[in-house]
Length: 169
Image (cartoon, rainbow, N blue to C red; front, side, top):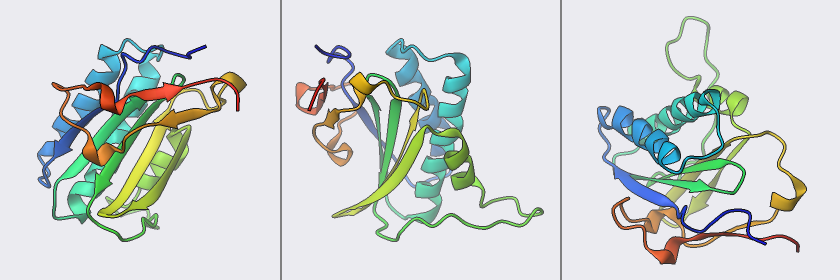
């Protein structure tokens, strides 16, 4: 039994390392979720936009190359993955009360149902999920196919990057 249809294939796009591209990228993430007509209320979509902005901003500000954003539907949550070319481990900053930056990962930790980071051969991937904090047992096993760094633009959502979800072990 499938938890969702495979027509919600992952969508990926590139984000040049320019500050002006962050707002366009975060709006694109939300547009993808809206296009899929997911069962997420407006509060989740606002959190999705805020957290996408934070994670994409980190990639743009702290790397010199293009980042890749991949948006997936797990059957329960929206998962956003941002790949960049910086292999350095992501360490949350400690900000003072008068500082204007350094709170992005605190927001991600507070609002995301889950989040994390992992290395890949060209840098790292930072990901987060928005949706219910408790995942139904039936949705606990989710397999992801091809990696985001190979994602093509939205216009070409080929079958080679399908997300498969199945029940059981």
